[in-house]
Image 1 (cartoon, rainbow, N blue to C red):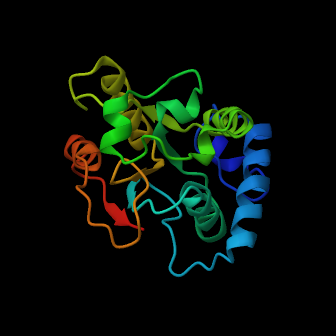
Image 2 (image 1 turned 45 degrees about the vertical axis):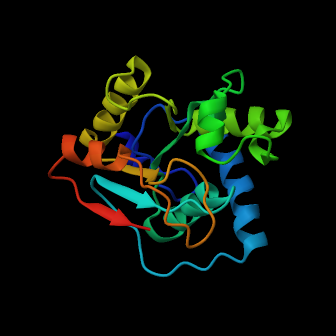
Amino acid sequence: MNWAERPSFGLRIENPKINRFALTTFRLIAGGFAKFKGLQVEGEFPQEGAYIMAANHTGTSDGLLTHVACFRTAHRVFRGTARDSILDPSIKESDEVLERTDKKGKFDFMALPVVSHVMGWDLRGIGTLGMHRGTDAVSDTRNKRFLRNCDNAIRAGELLGTFIQETRVEEGDLRQVFPGVGIIARRNPDVPIIAV
């Protein structure tokens, strides 16, 4: 039996490296946020095949809510992307990155030690891919690895989710869209992009 045929709580798991305990705790945390926020899902996520999902990022819980929407409509776990400092709390972002993303000197819920360690463990456990902010997306060794991992997930038929603005933005903020989604799409020209 392959991994896609072994559901976990009704979800099809396409990545054999997913830690099922991490998935369970992630679903509990994400489900709690969805209930608290009153999440209502319109439309559906693709139930099979590779797609690149491009979303806006307006709040801390967006990644959680996007996962819940995918769980509810497509019954599958998508391969998300996040900044490497969320996945590994020992990584500190440079002042230049914090200034560019308007985060310097501001409170960041995800930076709280308990939150960052629990969410970092959970996100790594469900296969989230880490990108390094603050460097050229193509030439930095860490981001070359990130792009290879994105390509591998797409080739494996997974749904790849990413935020297009590299950071949380206010609703209606038309901040520059960073090239990550375009780079991934150019490297995988036959894979559809869906906007969330």
